Amino acid sequence: QKHGAELTMSSLSLPAAFVGCGAGLGALATLWFQRASACASCSVRSPRNGGPANAVVERRDSTILAGGSSSNADSEFLNGIVRILWPRINKHLKTLVEENIVKAIDAALPSEVHGSIKIAKLSIGASTPHFGGIGVRLTNDEAIVMDLGIDLTSDLDVQIKAFQIPLGIRAFSFHGTLTVVLWPPACKPPFFGGFQVYFVNPPDISIDFQGAMQVANSKMIYRAIHDAIMKAIMNAMVIPARIAQDLSDDDDIGMNELKYPEPIGVLRLLMRSARDLPGGDLNLDGTRTSDPYVIVELGQCSWRSKTVHKTTNPRWEHGNVADFLVYDEQQCVNFKVYDEDEYSQDDLLGHARGIHVAELVPGVVDEPLPLEAD
Image (cartoon, rainbow, N blue to C red; front, side):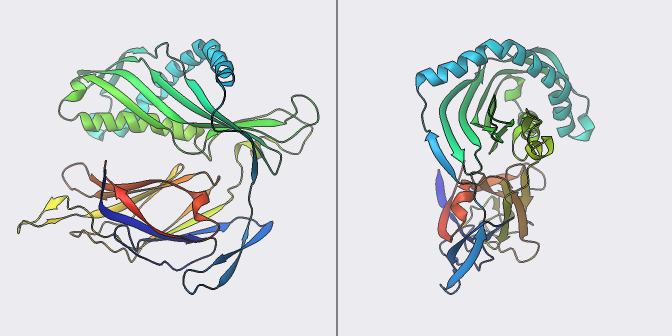
């Protein structure tokens, strides 16, 4: 659902002035991307005066070998392997939930109620992940990259006690794109010296609760459980984190290079203003206003702007610059605008999601992005 507020941003591969237009997180942001190292040059145009600017960039260009939608045979081959391995994976996931997730949920709750989360029953279920939409590409450094769409709807049976109240989780769904990289190249079997497995962008997860979770205060517990699961996934497998293994002693690439690769550049954000935001609060004179702030997310990192009080047309003039390390041009930038509330949960006023870094550089982006409401 869209409303009248819009986000407008300008970006290029050198520091650039912002050219604002329209409404919304509008006249809002300058995005600047500076490559970490250079091996090729390109020409972009400055939004300030239309003149040329030289930018140096390093790209991991790729050639698509197969992609988009894989055949049923390809998918079933992989899904068959997962079905065979699932009992072992299931056992590992159960241990992970018991030893790590429960502690993380408990830590996310207010300190006054720490120790109130207990697992009374835990069954991960028999449903296995389904892979589809398999794409394969070859990069200019001879890395074989496979992008695998993954979907899991698990028939969980989890019974939790929170504040001595029994709560239930009956289903868990997970959707994302898993990337597998086979690199560096080798001249003997298995013909690559290592592998990496990661998510370029955080996957989407949803949790289906039952019983007392549907009553008052459920939002706090739901958020704690959701955030704890998401944090565990992000810390383990959302870049720059990854699962990696060195398979060869015959090359110069070791575990450090596979597990902790250098970023390809830095994305700089200058937050300026927003226009025509919804009014989340009611003034005494009957008009509506908000106390807006913006959260920007890229990979594992997030940044929050300062709150501008009592306005639907905020301007940020101090402390409004943030830098993000970029590890893949397919990473997405997400903007979320909230109304800060002192005595209740902050309300989401609108969001703009899924803006690929590749769309921001090289070149200039200057177009309004409408904020959508949940």
